[in-house]
Image (tube, rainbow, N blue to C red; front, side, top):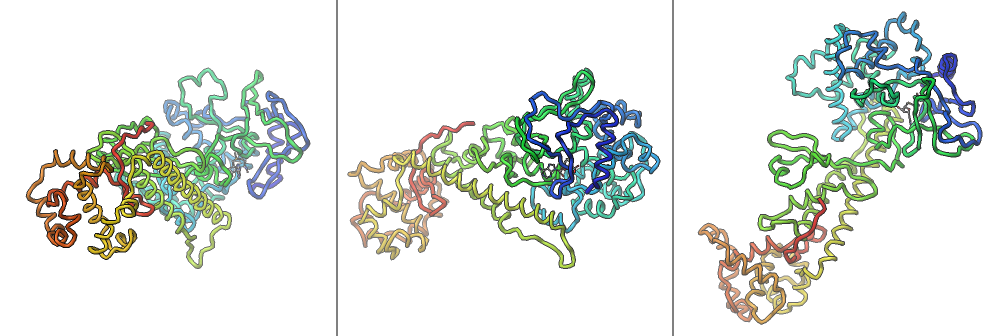
Length: 585
Ligand SMILES: C[S@@+](CC[C@H](N)C(=O)[O-])C[C@H]1O[C@@H](n2cnc3c(N)ncnc32)[C@H](O)[C@@H]1O
């Protein structure tokens, strides 16, 4: 944490060089969030009233960086990287560079020790294993190292001796291979921040994290040369970058006619001791953690990410453009990776249920049906529940002789807790949605439990056959499917009843179109012999009426595939009339 004097010197430096800081603001150092700005007395600044004005000459931009590294002038895509390298040089260059720098008071206020997880110890990072944050960090560090190596090459900068091992890791690996996160953390932790050399990877990582957590977009400078340039290009904005973040806070950054970049808060009124916040963008906790090193459990923009790895052919068969919907991450010949952000409140991600509905569609269903959507919800709930187990089972891992930083342990626990909460809510949402869809289509359904209750004659036959006294016994005795097959044939043979007509219709449809091979008959024969002719003789009032040939069973099995949805929550088979379901895709 920076010292009071360092903070005071920075504020003084800015004011001595033309910055304006409204006297109603004071900056203090807080335990939870480092430097923070507070309002001294009750006030209501007007929406266009600048509370802080910083002359352009105090900003650190790519222009200054290019003066230091003119070889990079043609590398338009590398401007942020070059500015970050420049910041490394300013902060960690030999004392002479640093001490002489105009920016010294500002550089001193930039904390050496950063809270972002890139600087956590290997023992702390192990606790992120299996999370999205872990994968993002690993991929970012791989990308960043390559970017830094390329930059050093373009700018003819020698590598620092302490990076030898790190460079070897990349030289030994084939281009596409990824270096594990633990290798990076071992390397980063072996570097002492106080004695970093400016051209080292750790210094570049520090700069990258400072830039990521403090830079502002160049477009706000309103420069004529901004047009057509990289929208991601950033610059450092001393003093205003001392403000902490809050989602939804309305703020404005604007250049005035005196070339001062102004900060306006549009929150309306403040009470004494209110914190004056900036708004870094409405960001999720994952971003808060990775880019800024903090977590806010009340964050309404939070989400839990659901990553799905599916066979590419399967995703391609679904008529949804995942690239357009922003769910698509990558694809090789065999696998497609899709991501969906599950939010604590609000609806499910738009394309998630359609995806699972299409994946649950039978060949015999040309379009999504009530059955496929109900089945899709079950499949999705099972995927979410599996992920939920991962978060639920988490326990902090630590080697007995290793002390983890209590603040980091708190962040890790919050990460798991809040992801768990979101996934729990999602499972609940899916269950409510499933009930809603089922109830809306109840008149087109027939539960086997009800059939069992109402058809006493048939239930008695099952008692004789399986010893099943009640419906639950069918499940425990593992004969539910056999009972279903027998009942379908009984119902088809019962020509007097007008009920269950959709089942009879489907039976006829399958029976008319099915081509039965010798192998099918062989497959069903043992099952058939188990019951026939025994049943015909013992219970002729059911099993000697109509047709009970092996063919009937083969057809009935297909009818089950097409019409029966087994409700996951209680394993109950329910006949659903084939009915289109309109999905919003
Ligand atoms: C742009 S700087 C703000 C000034 C910073 N507090 C400092 O000490 O220099 C961003 C950093 O401030 C801290 N920060 C910002 N907003 C925060 C918040 N709402 N809660 C906790 N820390 C926060 C994080 O460490 C973040 O990386």
